Image (cartoon, rainbow, N blue to C red; front, side, top):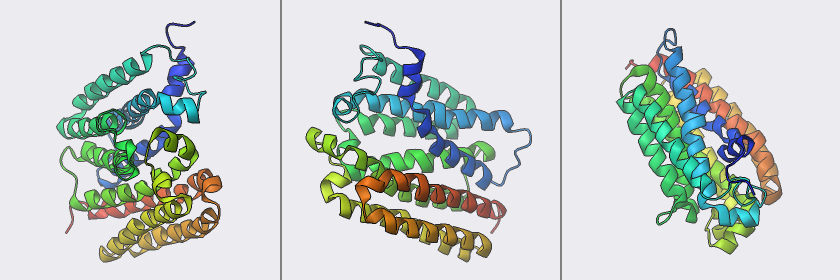
Length: 294
């Protein structure tokens, strides 16, 4: 039996597919800052790596380690329950990635270090006892939404400004973080049985699939309505119209999702969530002329 993990198992543990969301949010932060990218590409590249392959990957490794008993029920082929990550290597990798994330964040400046430290603390208390925020879908989904959307957006804007971002950037980033709570609920539909058996109170477990699906749709839609209202107030009518059109597309897809939520949660994640993140990018461009303005 292997005593060290194969590189392919380590990559699978770090789940590269999950890195897209924080990397995208970081890019939105860079764009919304209104600062020119010329001469900043090394810093931007380091920030993208910090958001995805470092901080997000750390959260995935920590989650898989502390979820190894649940995964043995829901996903026994995962690297830790299958034995491809042997012994305590899952924990060692999570700790090593945490340290590496902090070193890179420190090199990018105090605002970025503070944001990374906050995100890493959330990542650990999300999965690790005694707090283990994921035991309750209300707290766990809020933590993940903030780590995946708000903090990377803040980090991208702070990297470019080398200061605290504009308050409008912070507000829009927070709204999309709130909406991401609903996206996280979609991810819980695939593991309802295992969560119920292990005492994890995800929203589908607490509310039932139909009610949780309706709530997730509401949580995703309402912050976007607020973003549209803010863009109109800031005289960005064209951008507001684009976000509204993207939201209308999501609502149409939600109607189909709600007819069979457990079977179509993954489908909606691949369709409606795509429109959601495109709306984030539109909002980021809308903020550019406002930064430093009235």
